[in-house]
Structures are given as structure tokens and as C-alpha cells.
Amino acid sequence: MNDSTSTPDSADTTDGPALRPRPLIGRRTGPDGRKFPWGPITAVHEIGPYAIVEYRRDASNTSKRAWADHGSTYFHPFIDGRDTGLGLESLDSALVHAIGYRAEGPNGRAADYFMVMIGGVPS
Image (cartoon, rainbow, N blue to C red; front, side, top):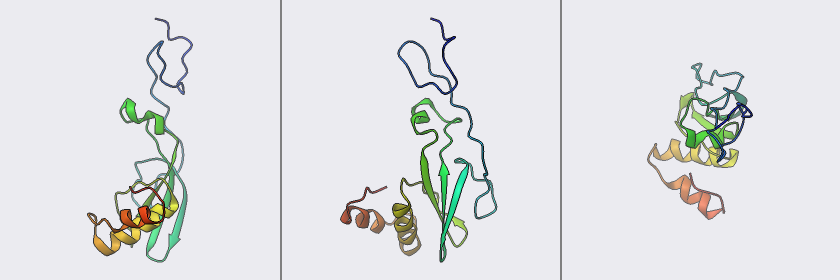
């Protein structure tokens, strides 16, 4: 088996193993001043007590099953400067989940129910 034609950004193929994607370059300091480990930050959206970090997911240090999401855009809410630990696929969902998280805590379900009611995808 010859992998000489594979590139570091190649997808998984049947004729050989996929190579780990390259790390993404960019700013990695979150609104709380700490290192943001999930990927380079492209924007921070601030609304009252909420700061929603828009970032490109860096899957270069993860298992092979996560490589398909490498470079995808995700949103990560912070509330009053505190990390929620959530990674969501849309800005709308991130804001709804931040509001729900603030009202109910980390195990609340109101945000998921609201997203289903308006036709969105729950987390």
C-alpha cells in the first residue's frame, strides 16, 4: 500500500489510512482570559451578560471519528465571563442555550424544548 499521494488534509479513503488534520492557526484566548482549547476564535458576540464565541473546531488532537468536523464553525456561550462547556452549531441555538443555562443550570432542558418548538435542532 502506497500512501505517497496522501496529503495532510486528505479525507479518509478506502485505499489507505487518513492522515491527522493539521492544527488550525488563530487566536485562542477566550472571554474569560483563559486558553480556548476547542479551536481558533473567529468572533465574539456579546449580548448583555452573554458572550458567544464563534470558532472553527480544531479536531487535530482528537480521535479519527471527529476529523470530519475539523474546521467547522461552532458557537460556545459564556455567561458573566464563566464558561458553560457547550458547543453548538448555530448562533441562535447558542443564545437560547445560554439563556436556559443561566435560568436552570447545566442540566436544564428548557432550551432544548424551545429549539424543538421553533423548528430548530436540540443540542
